[in-house]
Figure 1 (cartoon, rainbow, N blue to C red):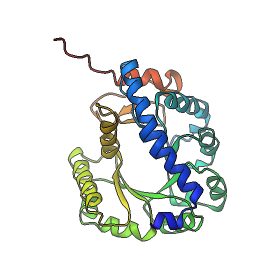
Figure 2: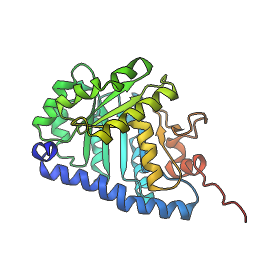
Figure 3: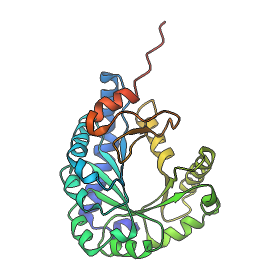
Figure 4: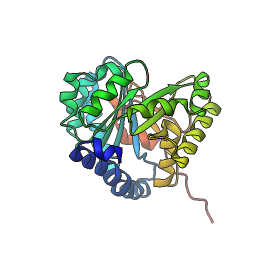
Length: 275
């Protein structure tokens, strides 16, 4: 109800259709068909770390990767940006059938950025929950845009999540989602506990924001869309990391090899057992 009353209708409909229909309905059907046809697993979304200061030099390769992904049925994309995201907007604009989540810093939400975001009806900013996030969310809300927040966490932050204080805080700024993003040093058992907390809070509908453990929930949704989990992140150097198999070494290079060959290499379908 809050979202419908405060988000501009065209933006809500466009983003909702891209995510709900293009990605999770029609795109999901296409993923299942292509997995069967091509013999490897395809993720429903892909995460890109845009923290390399040279990421702008690789925009043509990102553009090609998204083209390849859409042909496979991938219509959701997560950009993890730790620098000025302004150069990403032309790339996002070119792919108007996909839904984009832009993870950014509070200081990135400026009047100049707002002018670029407003026409992009298929983009949702996801603001890092830290000093300045309240002000950034207020700016986005006043502009009638959909937005979320994310909280990087590790072991020392677990109690803040489990006791609900995080969600009590974030809901005051009306984000659609409160994403929990495990830091690189976060142990797997802590991530599991944070994920369980997110499930419990969602089930109980305890807060006016939807918790989402970035890796685990993304992986779980992939298991619903097709049989095998597949959770893919490309770091700033273009290497593929299988987040559902953190013990695996990184694969290839997106900028040289392209998306499809790397997915084929990292996620081959298991051969059916002979009768």
